[in-house]
View (cartoon, one colour):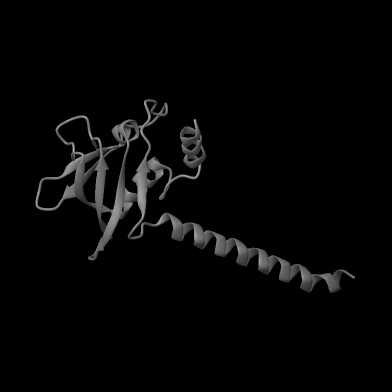
Length: 148
């Protein structure tokens, strides 16, 4: 009896491993930046306790660099849209920033800027924004605001 079940168990384990692998690959594909992706920072007066003071130095075309301060982005809100991927040895992206401000000092990128950001820094920004795209958690709250 046990020998008869062995092939079924092996098949079940193989299917389970395949499902986990496909799910992992899908998650990785979703978390890597693609042209057209958007990072949305919803404005909030409350910045989560324990946040570090992460500041990312980014480049602007034909200008000096500027600073993306994650706490300022979370407080004031704004968005980054990935417009193009820039080839080369490192994976950089040209993005468009639109929002109030990116920093509370002279490193501010302004309310509207075209930036060049490294893929690692985009990953940090995605974590701070809650992933790429508009969060599904915010849509019902927005719908409630409209109906009131």
